[in-house]
Length: 521
Image 1 (cartoon, rainbow, N blue to C red):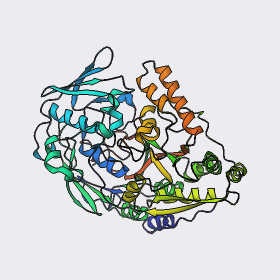
Image 2: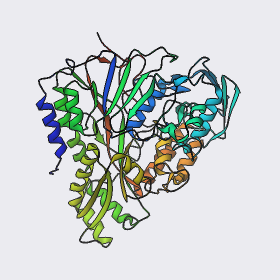
Image 3: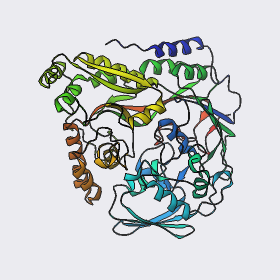
Image 4: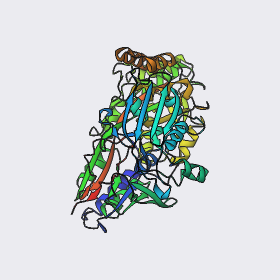
């Protein structure tokens, strides 16, 4: 398969042109960190709406939650206290009481974090008008402040992972009620949290600058400044990194990029979880995709083994189900259709398209999306399916796919690693695009609602897992989406930078910068 990829030539030029330089040599200030992001600008830094990888990365520096994943991990077993110093649950796990740390301060002088802020934040997270993650909190019946440092949550039914919903991820982040009400819509660009770094200023399309939150309850950060530069072009990030203008750069999930990056003097490549599962979501409501034979033809035409090998086996593996493989409840035998070009052609002919057909896809202009679109385009062409790729800027892409403007949506994501979260957000009818609680059900899938709902309240974990596995089989059988590949997070950094922990995972999908992050002497 031949795939045109101009930006890869730019990467090569960037690395080769500056291969004699070491990023360590150009480091200007040991207390100032500069990162290069694969993004054109800030999108939405209200943590309850942040969906892009870039925004999620920043949100995690700014905000905290009742509990948190231990830095460097994505394992729910590592969840530890954050704002809450302790908690207890009733015997039936329906009433949870959290004791808050006293004296935790908001950024930008907004005072002490109180139980009222927690109540406000979680109620906001559960409100579909004020949160993209409201469906996760459907079982939250009552959230109360018993006193300034005690919060009690009453559930209508048990949830698969209560602490996960309250962790430093998605709807679990706690925000300042006063700041949110004062700033209104401006909060999405000027967020206020209680995390280690506060947003100081932004230059649209250029950078976001952060200063340490000096009253951070875990201690003043060791870095004096963090700058997040928007360098959407991979070649620009690579050149800036090799020249020492940035200390950390978002990598490219391409094995040739990996080989070049590993040869740069003073560079360390971090490959970490969670691996994002990319699924080609298919809008089942529109012609010709409402014909399951066309959806099956698409599935047979795609060669995921080839894609994984091309991208690089160091960080890519074949998708085998409707949810990521690290999720509790993952079904390895969900029934994904095998690659079979002749079968794809036969199904198209049977559906009334013996000469093939053309299907539109709106695609992000980010290099990784561009590559994916080109791979799909080349593979589908062999089955007489023309993929009409319409590239748009990444933020616009996010908006357009949430307006049902793309019949196919190539979307990579990781969620809290329990099957309920991914299944609910991508495949439950309550999350369909266009509904009040819309999240990311681009396919308008509804075939596994009963299993997803039943699993959510099932108290026997073995039965719960079986329900999740059954849901995945139904989703794959109906071709709501075609699992493509799972891809780990990839960044390159200056060897003198110490994250302050072993970076094996990050739920924010980017490096977590904490009070412990520093440059080695």
